[in-house]
Length: 336
Ligand SMILES: NC(=O)c1ccc[n+]([C@@H]2O[C@H](COP(=O)([O-])OP(=O)(O)OC[C@H]3O[C@@H](n4cnc5c(N)ncnc54)[C@H](OP(=O)(O)O)[C@@H]3O)[C@@H](O)[C@H]2O)c1
Image 1 (cartoon, helix red, strand yellow):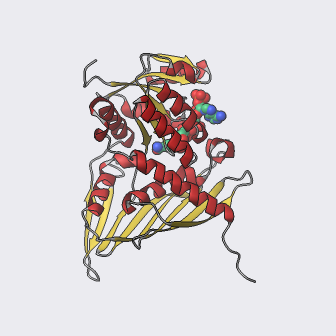
Image 2 (cartoon, helix red, strand yellow):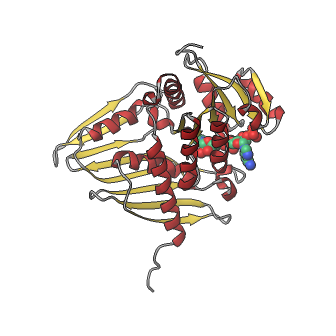
C-alpha cells in the first residue's frame, strides 16, 4: 500500500443513503468500497451485486473483523451510530459516521474518546460541509465580508410520507431535529464560531413522540441571535440567511452542487443602496468530496479533513440536546 493507495471502505448496513454514497464514490481514485455488511446476507449480496462491491457479509461484526477493510462508513439509524462507530474504532478502523454523529452529546464524547484511545480517525458526514459553496461561505464570514454576524436564520424541511421510515421511530433516534435540524444547527454553529449561551424551542410532536416540526432560538455571548427551523411536513426547503453589521449572505447550503441546481452564495453589502453579488461554484458531489477528504485525512493526517471537526461535532450535539430539552418543556402558555 502506498500513501496514495485508495482507502478501502466497508459499509455498515445497506442503507438508502449508502446507495447514494457508493454511487458517488465509484470511480474515485481516493476511495474503494470493498465490502458491505447487512443484518441479512441476501440484502448485503443484492447491494454488493448492484454496486460491484467485491465482498458481502452477514452481520456488522463480520465487517469489523475483515482485514481488507481499513475504514467504515456508518449509515445506520441514529441510535446505532455510537455503538457501531465505537466498535469499529476499537477494531482498528477509521470511521466516517453519518449525521447526526449520535443522539446525545455524551454519546458523541464517548465516540471521540474511543477514537483517541484507538489512534483512529472519526469524522461526522455532513456533505454540505465539504462542498465549495459552504467552504467559501465560512471563509467569507471569517474574513469579515459582511461584518460581525448579528442574526442567522437557517431552515431545512421536507415531506416524510412513509410511516415506517426510521426518522419517525423514537427508538431509532428519529425526529425532525436530529435528522433535518442537524443541518441548520450545524450551519449556525459554523457561522457563529461558538456555542450559544441559551436556547429556547417549541415543537409539534407525532403520536409516537418524535418532533415533526420544530423552531429553536439561540442567544450567543457576543450579541448574535440565531433561529433554526426544521420540519418533516413541508415541501423541500433549505435556506440560510446570515445578517452581519455590514451586509448579508444567503445560501441554500446544498449537499451537492449540480449543473441543474448550482450552489449560489448571494452576498449583499453597502447599506440602503446595496451592492449585490451572486457567487457560483462548480458542480460537486458532497458525498464524493467528503469521502475524498476522509481518505486524505487517513493517508496524510487529520488536517486534510475539510468537514466538521471533533469539538464542533460535540458542540452541535450539545446544542441539539438543549434544543430538544427546551422543546419538551413546551414553552409558556398564552394567558387567557
Ligand atoms: N448526509 C446525508 O445527506 C444523509 C442523507 C440521508 C440520511 N443520512 C443519515 O444516514 C443514516 C441512514 O439514513 P437512511 O435514510 O439511509 O436510512 P435507511 O435507508 O433506513 O437505512 C438504515 C439501515 O440501517 C440498518 N439497520 C440496522 N438496524 C436497523 C433497524 N432497527 N431498523 C432499520 N434499519 C436498521 C439497515 O441495514 P441492513 O438491513 O442492511 O442491516 C438499514 O438499511 C441516518 O443516520 C441519516 O441521518 C444522511
